Amino acid sequence: MHMQDRLYDKPQTLQSIATDANFDEACYLRANPDVAAAVRAHQFESGRQHFEAFGRQERRRLQLKVEPGRKRSKLQQIRRLIRDDMQMQEA
Figure 1 (cartoon, rainbow, N blue to C red):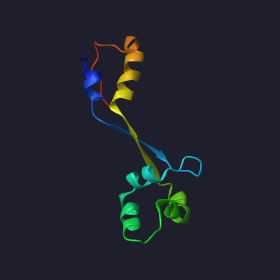
Figure 2: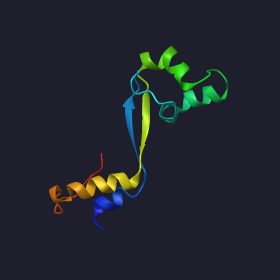
Figure 3: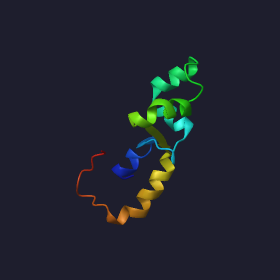
Figure 4: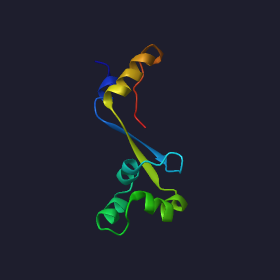
């Protein structure tokens, strides 16, 4: 198993600025635990309500999950382009 394969055995996350076009409730709450707590405490009806009131202006983020198998599949597609003689660091 290549070192790169081991890096992608665990779930990864990607973050993106939340917008009207890409808003996803679960991703917004995952990226903003303070908002999730406020929703649980009934301070907001939903993450969407918080986003519309504050999150858009604050440029709050979404946190997207990337399943390990998907990253491994992508890695296999580009394997021939990766040099094995250099150490890889994950950003």
